[in-house]
Image (tube, rainbow, N blue to C red; front, side, top):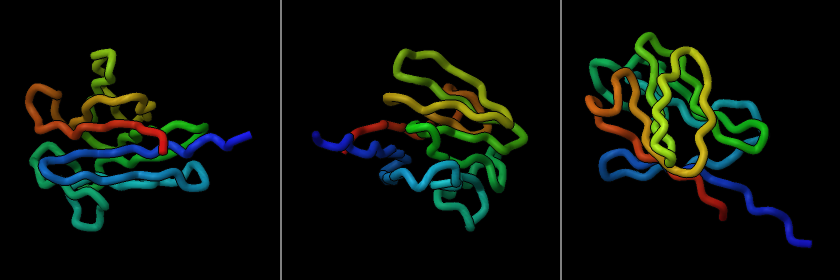
Length: 115
C-alpha cells in the first residue's frame, strides 16, 4: 500500500511563490506581516507587524490571524470569510488579503496541492 503524499501550500505574492510544507503539527510554518523578521514581509499600511501565521494541524493548513484589522480569505467556492484573531482552514485554492478586504488590497493567491 502506497503512503499518502504530504500536501503543500503554495502562496503567490506579486512575482514570488512561497512553498509551505507540513511540520510535525501545530507550529507556525510561515509568519506574515510588516516586520522584517517575518517569512513573508508585506509592507502595507493595513498590515500589522506580526499579522498572521500559517499552521498545519489535523491534516490541513490554517491561516491564524493575530492582527488588529483582520484578514480575508476567499475560497475556491467564492465564499469570503473575515478572520479576526481566529483561524480559518485553507482548502483547495483561493485568495488571502491582510488588513483590508479583497477588493482593496493586493491579494495573496494560495493553492493546496499534493506531491
